[in-house]
Amino acid sequence: MKFVINNARSGNPVIVYEKDRAAICVPAEIVSGKIINLMMKNCDEIRLAIPWSIILKLGLNRFKFYNGNLIPIDPKIENVSAEDRATFIKHLVLGKVHISDIKYPGRIFVEEVKELGVLERPGIGEACIDLARMSGFSTSAVYALLMTVDGNVADCEYAVRFANKHNLPCFSIEELIEYRLKNEKIVERVVEATLPTKFYGT
Image (cartoon, rainbow, N blue to C red; front, side, top):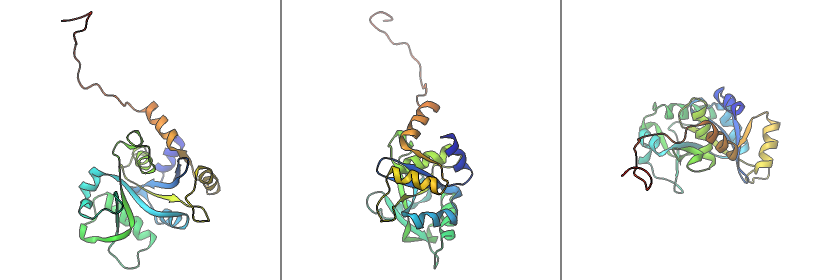
């Protein structure tokens, strides 16, 4: 995982996978037009994974959700390029985009993910924000589900082959969960007290 984290910290896309799905992902604050192009050529829709607290902070909750947890948006400009979308995403997560500058609906799907990442829900979006946070960025990430040349959702085997072909590091959600459990302090002491028991105290 350290190799994957270092690559993400340097702005390189990485592959995250589970058994039946895989995605290209990158921390939202450093997404580039080149990475957006890579996603558009090899993936399904582009998603911006952020927790509900950030959706509220950015004011995106005023837009109608699509399919339960997706908000389709775009920059309000003509002929949007991959570079335009990358710049828009970076400015958005930094709080530099005014609501009036957002086009709705659009082709960037803001996805609500769980604040605590894969330890709260072991999903692709949660894995992506975990990676962003561990790389030193905010809990926001851009990802897109990898598709095969036949137009099907890629499984883990296809994902590994794709990663090797494009020289991209990859990791599984299971590996991320194991890494977090080993390296993070999950339980924090909040209060301490002496409790009476059958053999001690009254």
